[in-house]
Length: 204
Image (cartoon, rainbow, N blue to C red; front, side, top):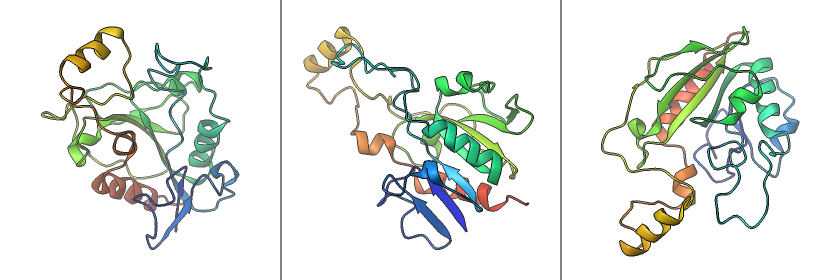
């Protein structure tokens, strides 16, 4: 059995044999073990645009996720498995993890427990490049398709400058290749299967 933490109730982990889904209604921060985990803690307050961008009407606080990332990190360290977050996540620095290079490969995370890497989900079926950082403990570290996912569109979570907003209007709103929030956050099936295989390789 594998525990999928901080995932959507009807997402790619739902109704899978051998996968225990911990969605928002179950509050994955309360996960008691004992199974290895695949963790997708929320990233809105940790990413490049944690403040909400220039159009944000509410002042945001960096890392204000209700303790979700910290809980996910503790679960991976205690039970083994893998955690996924966007490339350049401020959580790595906040929790004294070493940022991996964009070129790929697994590297020690600096905590004498885990390993980290940068991989683009565009290699595994996502329409955007979706550069991602992984943090893994106690599991096999697979060879992944490293480097830039050529031919994939830009992944953004909103308009982050007046210039970009104006350009989008000029081009009709869709010509910049922006995609819906639900698609941005979705995990491709092939990438999900890699993460599950990593968690299933945990030996205790």
